[in-house]
Image (spheres, rainbow, N blue to C red):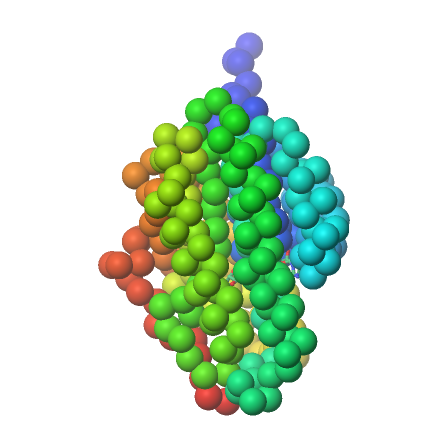
Amino acid sequence: MPTPLTPPLAGRRALVVGGSTGVGRGIADAWAQAGADVLVLSRSAPAGPGAEALRWAPLDLTDRTAAQRQLTAATADDLHLACFSAVHYGDRRALFGDASEDEWRRQVDVNLHGLWLTLAASLPALRRTAGTGLFLGVSSEVVFNAGPGRSGYAATKAAGAALLNSVAQEQDADDVRIVQVLPAGMVDSPGIRRRRPGDFDYSSYMQPAQFGAVATELALTSGAGQHGESLVVDGSGEWRPVGEATPVSQSRRTAS
Ligand SMILES: NC(=O)c1ccc[n+]([C@@H]2O[C@H](COP(=O)([O-])OP(=O)(O)OC[C@H]3O[C@@H](n4cnc5c(N)ncnc54)[C@H](OP(=O)(O)O)[C@@H]3O)[C@@H](O)[C@H]2O)c1
């Protein structure tokens, strides 16, 4: 009788913050399909196809004290893989003078301080593991293309990318490698759908599952050769360093 093949990520423990939907969900599903034990942290539990393969615990990054406690609990065991994909876009695009301070604070709490808390909790767990750990940050073209109508999103994503780039330079790449991935265009996700009219045509948008190949490859290699890099993922699921393929701006002056 043939021996069943062992999945390539069997025995690896993974954490995906913001893995209930969108790009983070695409990464969580890919790692789970490859055999990793994946814990998702988010406000709502993953639903739909593949959700049964994911573990979940609640996390609301707008409650800083509770979030720190929940992240500490989630990283008590050694980790091989960690991903941060949580985001608060805001309900609509708005020029600076029309955006509320409350919205700004939520963007800072989720997009930036959430990343800080996740790094602080997960780096020690990634360093403890035998072999090399991988921290995967989900970035955005807005980091490279500041634009009107989304100053809070742009500022928090750019600061998050700078945080990861700086920590990557402090980090021994034999212990933990830090890599960022970003889409070449828009991705169909619940956060984006909340900001679009009901009859919007998403046929040109990427799908979260298109991040599966890069996430699995980076997990299998622990990010070898990519430490400190930002990789642009395109609609066919292929990827290139951002220096070779900076995505075009998705900023528009009109609210959408
Ligand atoms: N979609 C795009 O076109 C696009 C383009 C460029 C970059 N990106 C990047 O891709 C990443 C994911 O974006 P997406 O559009 O795929 O997002 P999404 O589907 O809206 O998912 C965002 C994730 O963040 C979680 N989240 C939101 N608020 C939270 C909170 N207060 N506490 C904890 N978790 C929270 C959500 O879970 P719950 O709602 O269950 O809490 C969900 O798991 C982001 O980093 C974004 O900047 C996306």
